[in-house]
Length: 315
Image (cartoon, rainbow, N blue to C red):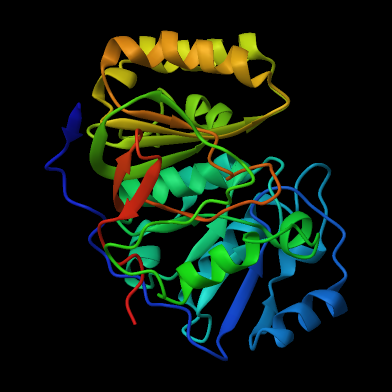
């Protein structure tokens, strides 16, 4: 059995757990979406939380949810506000990368709290991991996922993670209805980092590109045919990122033939002799499970198990 590990330390800035009766801030750092504010508030209240909506959520600037200034101000304000216990993104789309070179990472680091989103929010996950040093959460967003009534364990996976119910040593559950596929067996220990594959590739050559040294790479995507998934992975390989990896967890690749994808994954990663597990239900899928970006985990591709090796939030 191949065991790959890294001595690289985990994210070092503690993230407070979401308390009962906490306040959740809603921001829209990327695209716009029509929001039923009453339904959103009721959803939160039914679970014991108060929803605070930031201005950009109710704005629209073409394909953006408000101007860059508005969206950046909302991001900063949500972190700076000590009454906000966690930050949830409205949706993905596009827009988060436009903010990266203007983010005050010192402000974020000094006010670390759970940030949840996926798709275009990948840009924030990568940048915060690199420059603020705390765990963020690749998980469901308000409009399409939580208010869209995606099946369990979408909601329970998110809330158990943010509340601190999953401690170091906890295995993350995966629904049996969606079988996983071992592409390359073995065990890896490392930081879990990644997100949307197109966004990961899109940051290459910038100061916000993924720090791949010794990580377990997670990636997912949607509306990308197999040849484009191949091109994106080849881009990462030629950029020298894949050779640095400790392991790979593949999320949902919506719309791609699974047997053909398995062949591509084997061709790409088997020569690297690192563990690869595919089919994890996280991303543009139903259910959409929450993963802690930047946290230390153990990936056992043969046993098809993902285990936390740190507390991702602190009670």
